[in-house]
Length: 110
Image (cartoon, rainbow, N blue to C red):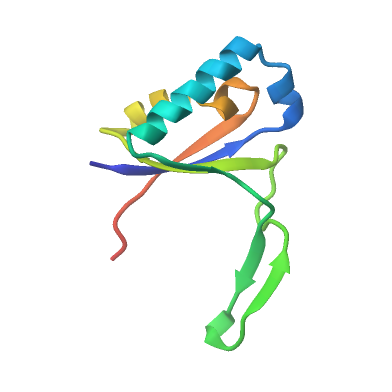
């Protein structure tokens, strides 16, 4: 079955202005996805790692990508199709709490 990676973007302000019943159902939806095998987590601050030509590693605090909203979390799950993956993530906390969720289809590495 195809696998998908999600990146959820959102902030506390958007979360706080969402109806608590909508938030509660979104968290219950996440719990059901997790029980079905999805791997999900809340993002802590990132570090950037580089090792050009395998000549020496450098590590810096902070994100490489930038967004209007901070990265809130990540998920990995299986779905029959991209359409099903979109339907599933449309009910997650980031999607319902005025954030955004990106869905990235995964392919096997060569």
